[in-house]
Image 1 (cartoon, helix red, strand yellow):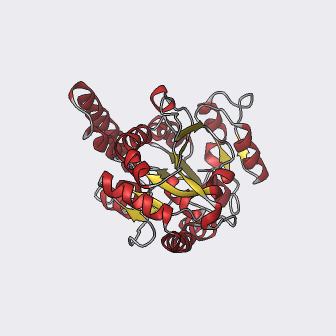
Image 2: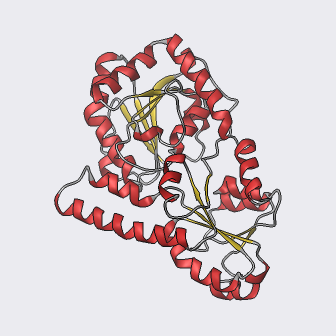
Length: 339
């Protein structure tokens, strides 16, 4: 969302309102630098009061994520009478939950299915309540197009990094993902249990580096001689430019995976499951896709030890990411507000 707001601020006066009225300092500074007005605690604690006073002046209202849209569409619809409404799904949350349920059993499975059905109803209602819906991939566009005709694909935005190292200046393998997101927890437990032991049989002196906020105890317990759990890292560049192979062993999820775009934009060759590659439109030449754990491990080892293969994936991957830069995606976003 921060990239989208920066793009919109080039053409519009943008006002940002987080539902919890909290602003981490680094995001607040970024927004202020880009001329984005932030409704902060101390100005308006009553959201309805704010929209009652200023709602008629808005031309567009962009609402992100299903629960936020459910809670705030009624009040914004009531007072922003001159605005067109856009709903940014981020990803189809119900789809992610449906896929997660396939890996559960018993009461846990039933609970996740109930959550999926509940969020699906919310997402459908949101889509039907707005003028335009943004989805992250053509696959999700196909699903949403059955509900509305005005669906636009807005992919993740990734600046392509200039800092890229050569094969011999890199080492180890990396996974990045916030651990409040259950697909990331599952991915690492699965990788460490089923895949990493096979990697260690094939590669000498290799470590798995795990980065991500809020790691639960079961992830922290993975710390060992060959596994480093760093937790939250504010500045990722030094980790990214020194890593030889990125892994994305996701077994379920939805939408485009930011971790894939981030790693590829830094020129890190990637081994991923099929789920991890969704939404990008890969041809199969940009990264290695493997769903079998043994094949996954062999592919990691091959990339790790083969300079020629590594260089090829680095080059093709970085070139591919040029279609997701702020300049390219920004033109598409701004064009939606001109039509």
